[in-house]
Image 1 (tube, rainbow, N blue to C red):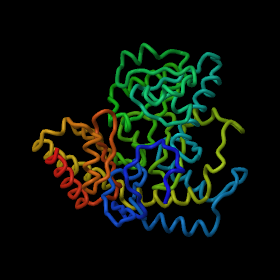
Image 2 (cartoon, rainbow, N blue to C red):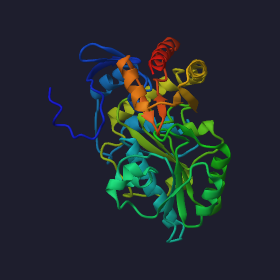
Image 3 (cartoon, rainbow, N blue to C red):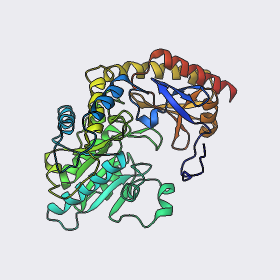
Image 4 (cartoon, one colour):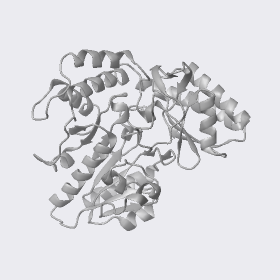
Length: 388
Protein backbone atom coordinates (compact mmCIF):
# COMPACT_ATOMS: atom_id res chain seq x y z
CA UNK A 1 0.00 0.00 0.00
CA UNK A 2 1.91 3.03 -1.31
CA UNK A 3 1.63 6.43 0.36
CA UNK A 4 3.78 8.18 -2.24
CA UNK A 5 0.86 9.37 -4.36
CA UNK A 6 -0.50 11.74 -1.70
CA UNK A 7 0.77 15.33 -1.53
CA UNK A 8 2.96 15.98 1.49
CA UNK A 9 0.90 18.65 3.22
CA UNK A 10 0.28 16.98 6.60
CA UNK A 11 2.64 15.96 9.40
CA UNK A 12 1.01 12.57 9.87
CA UNK A 13 1.68 10.06 12.61
CA UNK A 14 3.07 6.73 11.40
CA UNK A 15 -0.20 4.85 11.63
CA UNK A 16 -2.98 3.76 9.28
CA UNK A 17 -6.46 3.43 10.76
CA UNK A 18 -9.18 1.25 9.32
CA UNK A 19 -12.09 1.11 11.78
CA UNK A 20 -13.52 2.68 14.92
CA UNK A 21 -16.35 2.31 17.38
CA UNK A 22 -17.38 5.01 19.83
CA UNK A 23 -14.30 6.65 21.33
CA UNK A 24 -12.01 3.82 20.21
CA UNK A 25 -10.17 3.55 16.89
CA UNK A 26 -8.09 0.67 15.51
CA UNK A 27 -5.15 0.58 13.11
CA UNK A 28 -4.47 -2.04 10.43
CA UNK A 29 -2.51 -4.09 12.95
CA UNK A 30 -5.40 -4.18 15.41
CA UNK A 31 -3.88 -1.75 17.91
CA UNK A 32 -6.48 0.20 19.91
CA UNK A 33 -6.37 3.94 20.61
CA UNK A 34 -8.67 6.27 22.53
CA UNK A 35 -9.59 9.06 20.14
CA UNK A 36 -9.58 12.44 21.87
CA UNK A 37 -9.06 14.24 18.57
CA UNK A 38 -12.42 13.20 17.08
CA UNK A 39 -11.35 14.26 13.61
CA UNK A 40 -10.61 17.68 15.19
CA UNK A 41 -14.03 18.14 16.82
CA UNK A 42 -15.88 16.44 13.94
CA UNK A 43 -16.90 13.05 15.33
CA UNK A 44 -19.23 14.42 17.99
CA UNK A 45 -20.91 11.02 18.36
CA UNK A 46 -17.70 9.03 18.04
CA UNK A 47 -17.06 6.42 15.37
CA UNK A 48 -19.68 4.22 13.68
CA UNK A 49 -22.64 5.61 15.59
CA UNK A 50 -25.78 3.57 14.79
CA UNK A 51 -27.88 6.65 13.98
CA UNK A 52 -25.35 7.86 11.42
CA UNK A 53 -25.02 4.41 9.86
CA UNK A 54 -28.81 4.15 9.64
CA UNK A 55 -29.17 7.60 8.06
CA UNK A 56 -26.50 6.90 5.43
CA UNK A 57 -27.93 3.49 4.62
CA UNK A 58 -31.56 4.56 4.34
CA UNK A 59 -30.96 7.84 2.49
CA UNK A 60 -28.49 6.31 0.02
CA UNK A 61 -31.29 3.99 -1.10
CA UNK A 62 -33.53 6.97 -1.87
CA UNK A 63 -31.63 10.02 -3.08
CA UNK A 64 -27.97 10.97 -2.70
CA UNK A 65 -27.61 14.14 -4.76
CA UNK A 66 -29.66 16.50 -6.87
CA UNK A 67 -28.96 19.98 -8.17
CA UNK A 68 -29.90 23.04 -6.15
CA UNK A 69 -32.18 23.93 -9.04
CA UNK A 70 -34.66 21.79 -7.09
CA UNK A 71 -35.83 21.41 -3.49
CA UNK A 72 -35.28 18.25 -1.49
CA UNK A 73 -37.03 17.15 1.70
CA UNK A 74 -33.89 16.69 3.80
CA UNK A 75 -32.38 20.13 3.32
CA UNK A 76 -35.66 21.84 4.17
CA UNK A 77 -36.04 19.65 7.28
CA UNK A 78 -32.48 20.37 8.35
CA UNK A 79 -32.93 24.11 7.83
CA UNK A 80 -36.02 24.04 10.06
CA UNK A 81 -34.15 22.08 12.72
CA UNK A 82 -31.29 24.57 12.82
CA UNK A 83 -33.40 27.73 12.69
CA UNK A 84 -35.75 26.43 15.40
CA UNK A 85 -32.73 26.13 17.71
CA UNK A 86 -31.24 29.60 17.20
CA UNK A 87 -32.15 33.30 16.95
CA UNK A 88 -31.66 33.53 13.20
CA UNK A 89 -33.72 33.26 10.05
CA UNK A 90 -31.92 31.77 7.03
CA UNK A 91 -29.29 29.12 6.33
CA UNK A 92 -27.00 28.39 3.38
CA UNK A 93 -25.60 24.86 3.10
CA UNK A 94 -22.14 24.02 1.83
CA UNK A 95 -19.56 21.26 2.38
CA UNK A 96 -17.03 22.47 4.93
CA UNK A 97 -16.09 25.11 7.46
CA UNK A 98 -13.85 26.92 5.02
CA UNK A 99 -16.72 27.19 2.56
CA UNK A 100 -18.96 28.54 5.32
CA UNK A 101 -16.35 31.23 6.04
CA UNK A 102 -16.09 32.10 2.35
CA UNK A 103 -19.86 32.50 2.09
CA UNK A 104 -20.03 34.67 5.20
CA UNK A 105 -17.16 36.79 3.82
CA UNK A 106 -19.12 37.42 0.63
CA UNK A 107 -22.27 38.16 2.60
CA UNK A 108 -20.69 40.92 4.73
CA UNK A 109 -18.99 42.51 1.71
CA UNK A 110 -22.34 42.62 -0.12
CA UNK A 111 -24.04 43.98 3.01
CA UNK A 112 -21.51 46.80 3.19
CA UNK A 113 -22.22 47.83 -0.40
CA UNK A 114 -25.98 47.79 0.18
CA UNK A 115 -25.63 50.44 2.90
CA UNK A 116 -24.79 52.96 0.21
CA UNK A 117 -21.27 53.59 1.51
CA UNK A 118 -19.05 52.45 -1.37
CA UNK A 119 -16.02 52.32 0.95
CA UNK A 120 -17.72 50.03 3.48
CA UNK A 121 -15.71 46.88 2.69
CA UNK A 122 -13.24 46.34 5.55
CA UNK A 123 -13.51 43.09 7.49
CA UNK A 124 -11.82 43.00 10.90
CA UNK A 125 -10.35 39.74 12.18
CA UNK A 126 -8.41 38.60 15.23
CA UNK A 127 -4.74 37.87 15.77
CA UNK A 128 -4.03 34.22 16.53
CA UNK A 129 -7.27 33.19 14.79
CA UNK A 130 -7.78 30.35 12.33
CA UNK A 131 -10.59 30.29 9.77
CA UNK A 132 -9.40 27.97 6.99
CA UNK A 133 -6.96 27.40 4.14
CA UNK A 134 -8.64 28.91 1.07
CA UNK A 135 -7.44 32.31 -0.10
CA UNK A 136 -10.41 34.11 1.43
CA UNK A 137 -10.31 32.28 4.76
CA UNK A 138 -6.52 32.55 4.84
CA UNK A 139 -6.76 36.32 4.37
CA UNK A 140 -8.62 36.59 7.68
CA UNK A 141 -6.58 34.00 9.59
CA UNK A 142 -4.44 35.84 12.12
CA UNK A 143 -1.30 33.70 11.94
CA UNK A 144 1.50 34.72 9.58
CA UNK A 145 2.91 31.19 9.35
CA UNK A 146 -0.13 30.14 7.32
CA UNK A 147 -0.20 33.28 5.15
CA UNK A 148 3.38 34.16 4.23
CA UNK A 149 3.89 31.80 1.28
CA UNK A 150 0.62 32.79 -0.39
CA UNK A 151 0.85 36.58 -0.45
CA UNK A 152 -0.70 38.78 -1.73
CA UNK A 153 -3.98 37.94 -0.07
CA UNK A 154 -7.42 39.57 -0.30
CA UNK A 155 -7.30 43.31 0.47
CA UNK A 156 -9.46 45.43 2.78
CA UNK A 157 -9.05 43.16 5.79
CA UNK A 158 -7.51 44.27 9.08
CA UNK A 159 -6.05 42.20 11.90
CA UNK A 160 -6.73 43.42 15.44
CA UNK A 161 -5.76 42.15 18.87
CA UNK A 162 -8.07 39.54 20.39
CA UNK A 163 -9.67 40.72 23.65
CA UNK A 164 -8.10 44.21 23.33
CA UNK A 165 -10.92 46.77 23.63
CA UNK A 166 -8.67 49.76 22.96
CA UNK A 167 -7.36 48.24 19.72
CA UNK A 168 -10.92 47.34 18.73
CA UNK A 169 -12.13 50.92 19.13
CA UNK A 170 -9.11 52.31 17.29
CA UNK A 171 -9.84 50.23 14.20
CA UNK A 172 -13.64 50.28 14.08
CA UNK A 173 -15.22 52.94 11.86
CA UNK A 174 -17.95 53.53 9.30
CA UNK A 175 -15.98 51.65 6.60
CA UNK A 176 -16.05 48.36 8.52
CA UNK A 177 -18.64 46.00 7.01
CA UNK A 178 -18.05 43.18 9.48
CA UNK A 179 -15.91 41.54 12.12
CA UNK A 180 -15.21 37.84 12.55
CA UNK A 181 -14.08 35.96 15.63
CA UNK A 182 -14.06 32.53 17.23
CA UNK A 183 -15.77 32.57 20.66
CA UNK A 184 -13.00 30.14 21.59
CA UNK A 185 -9.90 30.18 19.41
CA UNK A 186 -9.31 26.48 18.78
CA UNK A 187 -6.17 26.07 16.70
CA UNK A 188 -4.81 29.27 18.24
CA UNK A 189 -4.55 27.73 21.70
CA UNK A 190 -8.05 27.43 23.29
CA UNK A 191 -8.37 31.15 24.02
CA UNK A 192 -11.82 32.20 25.26
CA UNK A 193 -13.25 35.56 24.25
CA UNK A 194 -13.64 38.04 27.09
CA UNK A 195 -17.26 38.92 27.92
CA UNK A 196 -16.68 42.69 28.08
CA UNK A 197 -14.77 42.60 24.80
CA UNK A 198 -17.54 40.69 23.07
CA UNK A 199 -20.18 43.13 24.27
CA UNK A 200 -18.12 46.04 22.92
CA UNK A 201 -17.82 44.25 19.58
CA UNK A 202 -21.61 43.95 19.45
CA UNK A 203 -22.08 47.61 20.43
CA UNK A 204 -19.72 48.82 17.72
CA UNK A 205 -21.34 46.63 15.07
CA UNK A 206 -24.70 48.16 15.97
CA UNK A 207 -23.27 51.68 16.04
CA UNK A 208 -21.55 51.44 12.64
CA UNK A 209 -24.05 49.07 10.96
CA UNK A 210 -21.57 46.22 10.57
CA UNK A 211 -22.18 42.49 10.83
CA UNK A 212 -20.77 40.28 13.59
CA UNK A 213 -19.70 36.81 12.42
CA UNK A 214 -19.07 33.97 14.85
CA UNK A 215 -16.87 31.15 13.61
CA UNK A 216 -18.38 28.24 15.55
CA UNK A 217 -16.88 25.60 13.30
CA UNK A 218 -14.88 23.99 16.11
CA UNK A 219 -16.69 25.22 19.23
CA UNK A 220 -20.29 24.83 18.05
CA UNK A 221 -22.70 21.92 17.59
CA UNK A 222 -22.89 21.04 21.25
CA UNK A 223 -19.22 21.12 22.13
CA UNK A 224 -19.72 23.84 24.76
CA UNK A 225 -22.94 22.36 26.13
CA UNK A 226 -25.31 24.26 23.81
CA UNK A 227 -26.11 23.47 20.19
CA UNK A 228 -24.77 26.90 19.23
CA UNK A 229 -21.73 28.27 21.05
CA UNK A 230 -23.06 31.85 21.11
CA UNK A 231 -25.66 30.77 23.66
CA UNK A 232 -22.87 30.37 26.22
CA UNK A 233 -22.09 34.07 25.79
CA UNK A 234 -24.38 37.06 26.29
CA UNK A 235 -24.17 38.23 22.67
CA UNK A 236 -26.07 37.19 19.53
CA UNK A 237 -24.04 37.38 16.28
CA UNK A 238 -25.54 38.30 12.92
CA UNK A 239 -23.93 35.37 11.13
CA UNK A 240 -22.79 31.96 12.40
CA UNK A 241 -20.44 29.61 10.51
CA UNK A 242 -20.79 25.92 11.39
CA UNK A 243 -19.41 22.61 10.11
CA UNK A 244 -17.35 19.80 11.74
CA UNK A 245 -19.80 18.35 14.30
CA UNK A 246 -22.76 19.33 12.10
CA UNK A 247 -22.31 16.09 10.16
CA UNK A 248 -20.68 13.95 12.82
CA UNK A 249 -18.09 12.83 10.26
CA UNK A 250 -19.97 13.42 7.02
CA UNK A 251 -18.80 16.56 5.15
CA UNK A 252 -21.32 19.36 5.57
CA UNK A 253 -21.10 23.04 6.49
CA UNK A 254 -23.41 26.02 6.67
CA UNK A 255 -23.65 29.68 7.51
CA UNK A 256 -26.73 31.00 9.27
CA UNK A 257 -27.83 34.64 9.29
CA UNK A 258 -30.42 36.88 10.88
CA UNK A 259 -32.97 38.74 8.78
CA UNK A 260 -30.95 41.87 7.99
CA UNK A 261 -27.84 39.87 7.08
CA UNK A 262 -29.53 37.12 5.06
CA UNK A 263 -31.40 39.67 2.95
CA UNK A 264 -28.07 40.87 1.55
CA UNK A 265 -27.67 37.80 -0.68
CA UNK A 266 -29.99 37.52 -3.66
CA UNK A 267 -30.52 35.23 -6.63
CA UNK A 268 -27.20 34.12 -8.14
CA UNK A 269 -24.98 35.69 -5.46
CA UNK A 270 -23.68 32.40 -4.10
CA UNK A 271 -23.82 28.68 -4.78
CA UNK A 272 -22.47 25.24 -3.90
CA UNK A 273 -22.85 22.18 -6.12
CA UNK A 274 -23.00 19.66 -3.28
CA UNK A 275 -24.30 22.00 -0.58
CA UNK A 276 -27.56 20.78 0.94
CA UNK A 277 -27.44 17.40 -0.80
CA UNK A 278 -29.99 14.90 0.57
CA UNK A 279 -27.43 12.44 1.94
CA UNK A 280 -25.43 15.03 3.89
CA UNK A 281 -28.56 16.64 5.29
CA UNK A 282 -30.05 13.29 6.30
CA UNK A 283 -26.90 12.48 8.27
CA UNK A 284 -26.88 15.92 9.88
CA UNK A 285 -30.52 15.51 10.92
CA UNK A 286 -29.66 12.20 12.57
CA UNK A 287 -26.72 13.81 14.38
CA UNK A 288 -28.80 16.76 15.62
CA UNK A 289 -31.53 14.43 16.84
CA UNK A 290 -28.99 12.59 18.98
CA UNK A 291 -27.40 15.81 20.23
CA UNK A 292 -30.64 17.59 21.12
CA UNK A 293 -33.48 15.11 21.66
CA UNK A 294 -31.11 12.28 22.52
CA UNK A 295 -29.67 14.23 25.44
CA UNK A 296 -26.02 14.17 24.37
CA UNK A 297 -25.63 17.94 24.69
CA UNK A 298 -27.26 18.01 28.12
CA UNK A 299 -24.54 15.68 29.44
CA UNK A 300 -21.64 17.91 28.32
CA UNK A 301 -21.63 20.19 31.38
CA UNK A 302 -21.19 17.37 33.89
CA UNK A 303 -18.47 15.77 31.77
CA UNK A 304 -16.67 19.11 31.58
CA UNK A 305 -16.66 19.35 35.38
CA UNK A 306 -15.46 15.78 35.76
CA UNK A 307 -12.66 16.12 33.19
CA UNK A 308 -11.44 19.43 34.60
CA UNK A 309 -11.42 18.02 38.16
CA UNK A 310 -9.29 15.08 37.03
CA UNK A 311 -6.93 17.37 35.10
CA UNK A 312 -6.63 19.65 38.14
CA UNK A 313 -5.50 16.65 40.19
CA UNK A 314 -2.76 15.98 37.63
CA UNK A 315 -1.81 19.66 37.64
CA UNK A 316 -1.35 19.59 41.42
CA UNK A 317 0.54 16.31 41.32
CA UNK A 318 3.01 16.92 38.48
CA UNK A 319 5.01 19.97 37.43
CA UNK A 320 3.86 19.73 33.81
CA UNK A 321 0.59 21.67 33.47
CA UNK A 322 0.55 25.47 33.52
CA UNK A 323 -3.16 26.05 32.94
CA UNK A 324 -6.38 24.21 32.11
CA UNK A 325 -8.33 26.20 29.51
CA UNK A 326 -11.55 26.10 27.53
CA UNK A 327 -15.21 25.22 28.02
CA UNK A 328 -17.43 22.20 27.58
CA UNK A 329 -15.53 19.43 25.85
CA UNK A 330 -13.17 21.82 24.09
CA UNK A 331 -10.38 21.67 26.65
CA UNK A 332 -6.80 22.86 26.41
CA UNK A 333 -3.88 21.96 28.65
CA UNK A 334 -1.08 24.53 28.61
CA UNK A 335 2.08 22.56 29.35
CA UNK A 336 5.62 23.48 30.34
CA UNK A 337 7.25 21.03 27.96
CA UNK A 338 7.34 20.50 24.19
CA UNK A 339 3.73 19.76 23.12
CA UNK A 340 4.90 17.68 20.14
CA UNK A 341 6.93 15.46 22.45
CA UNK A 342 3.94 15.20 24.78
CA UNK A 343 1.46 14.27 22.02
CA UNK A 344 3.92 11.76 20.52
CA UNK A 345 4.23 10.00 23.86
CA UNK A 346 0.43 10.00 24.27
CA UNK A 347 0.22 8.34 20.85
CA UNK A 348 2.74 5.65 21.85
CA UNK A 349 0.56 4.91 24.87
CA UNK A 350 -2.66 4.59 22.89
CA UNK A 351 -4.15 8.09 23.16
CA UNK A 352 -4.79 10.50 20.29
CA UNK A 353 -4.55 14.21 21.13
CA UNK A 354 -3.78 17.28 19.02
CA UNK A 355 -1.67 20.35 19.73
CA UNK A 356 -2.81 23.99 19.52
CA UNK A 357 -1.00 27.32 19.70
CA UNK A 358 2.57 27.11 20.96
CA UNK A 359 2.22 25.02 24.12
CA UNK A 360 -1.31 23.61 24.33
CA UNK A 361 -2.66 20.08 24.09
CA UNK A 362 -6.27 19.96 22.89
CA UNK A 363 -8.70 17.40 24.27
CA UNK A 364 -11.65 16.95 21.91
CA UNK A 365 -13.49 13.79 22.93
CA UNK A 366 -16.76 12.69 21.35
CA UNK A 367 -19.60 14.40 23.19
CA UNK A 368 -20.99 11.00 24.20
CA UNK A 369 -17.70 9.96 25.82
CA UNK A 370 -18.16 7.97 29.03
CA UNK A 371 -16.70 8.82 32.44
CA UNK A 372 -14.81 5.52 32.33
CA UNK A 373 -13.17 6.57 29.06
CA UNK A 374 -12.24 9.90 30.64
CA UNK A 375 -10.64 7.96 33.51
CA UNK A 376 -8.71 5.85 31.00
CA UNK A 377 -7.42 8.99 29.31
CA UNK A 378 -6.41 10.55 32.64
CA UNK A 379 -4.43 7.38 33.43
CA UNK A 380 -2.56 7.67 30.12
CA UNK A 381 -1.90 11.38 30.67
CA UNK A 382 -0.53 10.62 34.12
CA UNK A 383 1.74 7.92 32.68
CA UNK A 384 3.04 10.41 30.10
CA UNK A 385 3.64 13.07 32.77
CA UNK A 386 5.57 10.59 34.89
CA UNK A 387 7.80 9.70 31.95
CA UNK A 388 8.42 13.34 31.05
